[in-house]
Image (cartoon, rainbow, N blue to C red; front, side):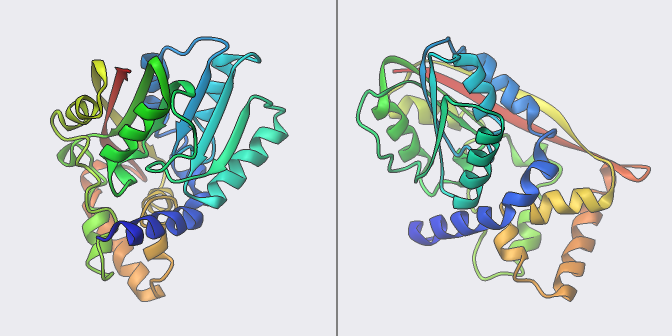
Length: 271
């Protein structure tokens, strides 16, 4: 897919998904956020960059970690995500976090600005993930740490059928390289190529719990990366896609709920 089109799909897709994102994914993605925070080893008073911040699920714990003497600059390509995050920050009197709509592959910050750079489950949506790591490296101070999490291997993510189900009903692939960085040692190699050293990685197996079919469907279609394509489906197409997706996760059904396996990969590196 042409990068400009890819960015447009991601921007407007996440605009559509913004209101459903937290109800769909806040609890399910907590293990990835916790692992990234632990490996990032943030210290009070530090100046932190976060890309693909979404609604601020990682931003606000980071703001707490660095304290009043520190600062978090959070970016996302989606205007709606940024608006929600900024409103949450204001409502909760979080004064050390600022939000900006920005492309993670072309950051509008000077070289050697930040003490750490974080990206929680965003790199798989970028047209050029390696370029986003280059940008992280550029804006980090010498000795600064980057920490990135992504979904793991396709075969270990029980919800992965969502992409072919949607792709066969639209003209272009929604997320053609979604699992690339989480496969094998790809993320580690990407860190090395960007110039990072002292690279560490961790692979985490998780279970995504959804208490009903309706919530599992909301997460898969309305609250995630296929939201833009999904909102253009007519009612019959939606019902057909719902049926196919629920069939794909039937092995993980437990009564009326679903326990779907997943995997995350977290990597850190030093400039």
